[in-house]
Length: 264
Length: 267
Image (cartoon, rainbow over all chains, first blue to last red; front, side, top):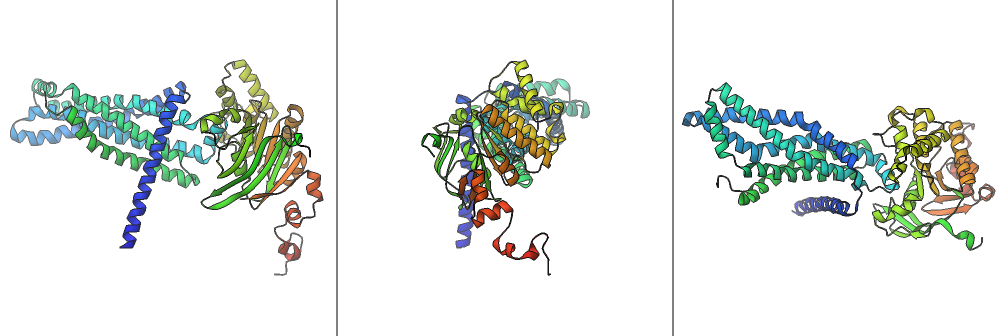
């Protein structure tokens, strides 16, 4: 029994310590936004790496998710004779849940891992100490451009994912299953509200922040050479993915109180 | 020594630091006079690099004081250390070059970050520094394309590009062939003689230490065991100092000829 209490106590303390480190990085980000130096060139470079570079993976994920979701919905809706509503379902689901969550997860795998690995390698090879020795704060130079880039890129990537998901759903339902185009589009436009898109974008901001804070923290605290960098990279992906899924649950409820589904 | 001469560019008092409860420095007192070269010698794991990092505020001591050009830096927040760090350049043990930039960009980086915008001035200064380390032709190469010694020399060019008043060298000659090592020693000496650059050199290369030092401090068991001129060090009769200078691992091995190179191994 004592062993169980000790183990669970240790786990809770470890979790609290970890959350403390994340909070400390958030504090440093706030401080950098007020007192830090701004590197515009690095921000642009990160927008290209994070936003431009993630488009293929996000578009493919969005398109195939929209297509599969449309196909599965069609098979079931057909039994009830409401197959023309597939467009509305795909659109609302893509905007509110599928596009933000899947984009978040794909960006985590692609960008979060790269952030943790790059910053972690800089840490273990003393490049971060070299920056500090030149009177450059590592948060100003490494974290803030990534925060800015991901906050700009995520909503745009989500918009792309939504667009391609809806287009793929349209192609499958209208061209694949022969549902009349006018019915499909009528339902889609009637049921998709501006709020649905706003929810997707807001989730994008939050997920982007989670990815960047968790991944940069793992990079900045990497130690023990290549093994430590590998461990940090794995942690960055796992922790960011879990955080996205958990935050998504609570955000869904929170945002639904401001933008209830089907209120208008 | 007069009181005036004791005013150092870097002054360290009762410096203590421990990692995971394991004490590394147990009360270090050290003064680095302006314009002089202090060489810190000591065995591996004695905390020589840790000492250099504390001089720049890259590591925070548990207690004690570090003053750089009269400014106490131990309690300063990271952002307020910028002023003291601009006065000091550092050569890291493995170079710590930015691997996303080529050699030229690496050397130019501290100038650009210090706010120099004049391209011609940057170009001529960077070229000059690369010439000093005999790498002027390698400006376009990436750090991964360079050998360990070349990387260290690029890092040295980067450390001096902003003409700092003090340069900290972490094992500047380790892993270099004797000729390149000697050219680095000459460079350190030249910077000190011509530009009055204060230097702190951490090394366990005794030949290099005697060649460049105005003073040598021997770090042992977390304290400064010896602090004096190279001549005083060489004249010392202390067996621990003699062992270190002569590269003898222990008294026991000294007395067993079979374990020494050139001795007879009876086993």
